Length: 468
Ligand code: PLP
Image (cartoon, rainbow, N blue to C red; front, top):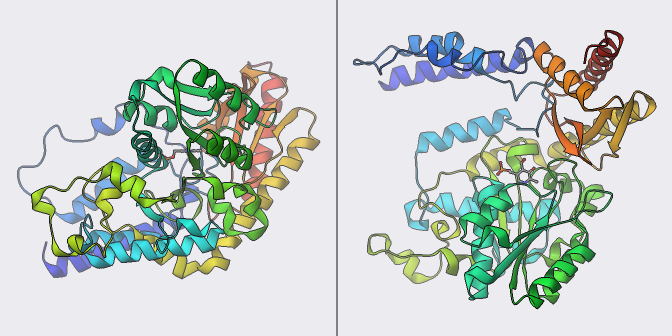
């Protein structure tokens, strides 16, 4: 592609994206294709000769768009938000265009130093403890996901213990994200040595049950090693009691990891920082700007209190990576902080987002979504046909129709088939529960009002038609 063609198609691509984002509400939120529909439109073999970019771009509309579920729609209320704001898209583009790999400081000093700096900014922005800052013995790094953060934290915990891996035990709650289970498996601990601790009536981990489990393991000759608490569990947005969990972790010498995947972003607002109470006891912490902080996937901020514990666990120095800057000991080489070697210039998009919106701009979105969730919860509460399962601490409302699982499943199916909005579900107390996650930048009160109207009318129709 010549520079002039690149310029031309670059403009066309941006124009396409701007138009898409302006009309995103016109598409069915959940893709309506059947399995295999997209592949059926693709040629069996790759083209022998290159094709024109005009044709490639046209195939986005023809082939790809029908198979898109519109995460950026203001009517997307499923799973969790996946903010992809314009500044973050431009940051991503800039990162792709520069095409650098920042695995060593020397392979692009700006890639490392901007990342270190922006991650330090975020500590102040979220009111996190200073010992996570790079100027102390701690530091932050961008992982791809909270799953990777969990994996590297378990590995650091494992290495810190320097004990028989078969006797190491990890703890988290029954409501923790499945990534913890995967992290335990991948890091070589025995899968049966993961304890899923019971929850209390707020779906948060019970510290008493945790301590009982640790004592039982010690008595059995096992070695408690790792504890993961969650700020905002996936199913119900429960906030684990970090202060009590952290005290137990200290008492029994466990690595304490805190997973704030979606909800950590709320701490941008001082009035919501209570969610992190006790995080100062954590050895590591992570949250995902790629969920609720206007930054497109992937972008997970992972912090450690003692960076040597992480780098000692992950650092390998082959001959071909040796260089003067590393030898000087004056630089960070992020390859030692993650599983892969290579890494993109991901902090650019975070830097763009933070500079474009400013702290106040980002706070505005969090406050808007929390207020909308509270209002939605109030509507649910006032409707005798529905039950509010959790009083939402932040932006996730868990509720269900009083009529039972079959009706709730039918509500979900019909709503999602309608294409008007997208909702997902979970199980709480073994009952199907609808989850309304409010966090897209463009979601306004009108979208939430319409969503509630649709949910109610679909439920009424199902009941009236006895159709479940
Ligand atoms: N932790 C929690 C609490 C989550 O809700 C999620 C996502 O649903 C994850 C971890 C996984 O996030 P990621 O996709 O960044 O690995």
